[in-house]
Amino acid sequence: MTPAVQLLAERKISFRLCEYDHDPANSNFGLEAANELGLDPDQVFKTLIVVAGGDEMCAIVPVSGQLSLKAFANAVGVKRVEMCPPERAQRATGYLVGGISPIAQRRSLVTVIDETAQLYDEVFVSGGRRGLDVAVGPDDLMVVTGGMFADIATR
Image 1 (tube, helix red, strand yellow):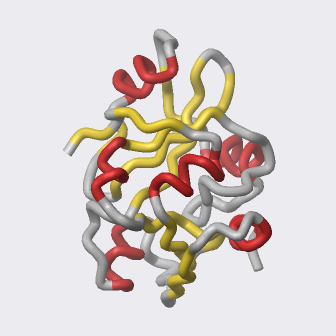
Image 2: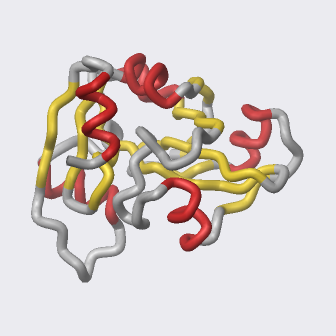
């Protein structure tokens, strides 16, 4: 059981586990999850770690889109945001790249969820390891991550 799954269970948040066989040769983890699970890529969200003002922060965007660094900066009120190096992201979250869950990270990071998550009854995010997603309601995701919704993705 990953820390993400454990926290969801402890908080009695409704969720479903969705497992698939991860192909080690595939580095497009989010699209792989959507394809393997037969899901709409707009409903599967990737967890990206960024650095803003020297601090790591978490962006959750659909795998069908891209993170707008400018929109993320506006959402959190900073001037500049850049992608976090993988090793630093792993240290900050406690998860390996490709399995970084927005839930139960090592440190509590400022988290912004793309507002399109609110279009669905449930969204799919990493469950804390490659080959494991969890389906959770967007409002529950916001609560468990301490996040907020904002328009941060480009399509």
